[in-house]
Length: 291
Image 1 (cartoon, one colour):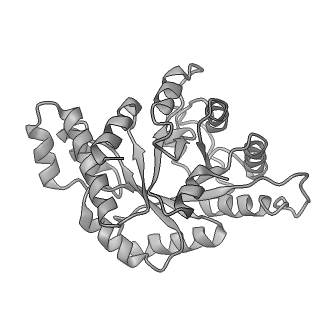
Image 2: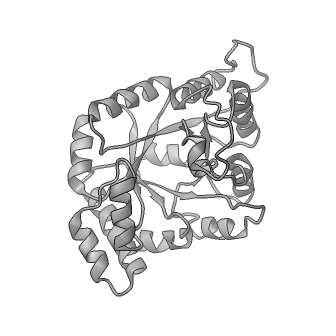
């Protein structure tokens, strides 16, 4: 059984960390960072051509992590594959014993390093969840029987700071109906946003993992506020980053304090840490959070 699923079923605070494969084949740094949180996190979430940028695949990287004794979370987007390829990817995950799957629609190709690439979008995140659920029942999308049935623990993403919020909740309901058991949120920095979201979604039967992106500078915070939909960094945190002598260390401290607070107040079922190029800092964030 999935370690993440087991943790949630035992009532534990779930912990996952996002790690991006390299542009190339040297996975040594990623494996080193993943091993540093073994026993502390319930999953290493491997991005799938994040921001429409060419990298080693999530599936191949997850297999390497699995072989190293780690618990991978496979990300799969609908942007780059049709339904045949998506089903093949899911079956391959089953062959490798990879159970955790995070379904994403995927950023548009114009945002990445191959802007001329043709997007597919045969299935969106709801479609991927639905077909994964079908495959786990021993059938493909066309109703054909499978020889051997994989087990999946399915997840999806949600943005708590969104207007209108009801649209995000409607999407969550569709994703849950399609098979989602847990959700990772866009990065959250203020308690009020999470409190409101938790109140509005208390009727939903799914685990919620709040997204954490450690701040590296005040400029980074301002940039995200201006350019990244769904992210809001409060002014007091920006001022705190401005006044910090060691800004990276301060960002780690802020992340740890936030995780500790949301855990103590029961505002989420776990956290998903997205260190974005500084994955070696994840253990430090967990230290700050007392995890």
